[in-house]
Image: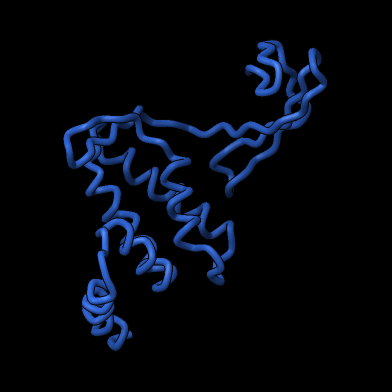
Length: 154
C-alpha cells in the first residue's frame, strides 16, 4: 500500500481488526520512510460497478461518494453512525447483487431514498430535495404532502 504522505510503496501493517459489523477490515499502517501512520479499509467487492448517468456519461461507482451524500442528508439526525454504515453497506450489496455491472444513477438514487425513508424522514426529504432537484418551497410542500398519507398510516 502506497504511503499517502511520501509515496513509499513499502508500508507495514501494524494492526488489523474487523470493522463495519464484520463487512470490512480496518488496518493501521506505518511508513518506515517518513514515519507516517494511516488507516485503510478493506471490503469485499463482488464486481466492478459502473454508474450510467442520465446524460449517458459513465463513471466507476464510488462508494465513498454515495456515503458522503447520505451522511450529509443524515447530519444532526438522531441516528447512530453504525446504523448509517450498515445502511450504506446494504445498499452496495444490493447494487452488486443485481447481476449487472452497469447501474443507472436513477436506480441508485431510488434505492438510497428507499433506505433513508425507512430510517429517518427528515434525511429522506433532504436527500430527495437534492436528488429530485427541488427549485423552490412548493417542491418541498408537494413532496411532503405526498409523504404525509404514508406517515398517517403508521
